[in-house]
Image (cartoon, rainbow, N blue to C red; front, side, top):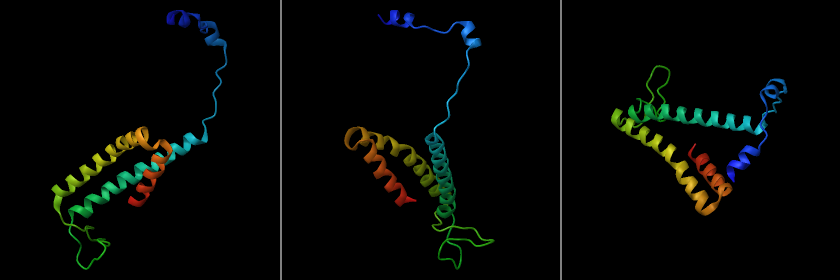
Length: 128
């Protein structure tokens, strides 16, 4: 039955493929907005990752209460070294990749898409 339906479709001939106009449609503004939001999210992710390394690895600069190194100083805060810095940034990468899977499970099983997105965005806003 399926093969009969497939063969009943009318496909364009070679002449029609050459002669017919190709009409494209405008890209919806929502597609552009999704691209912009994804770009901003990537900037946030990689920007935070780079800052994490310095502040975990390097010690608090002398006479600094904020961790800022000033013009010629090295920024830092925890002074935990490269091993701790690598471990925490690797966990950050894992957490950033794993939480969408958990969110998908919660959305499909309990809350639905809209409520899950709203709650997760609120949590992300608190984290940033």
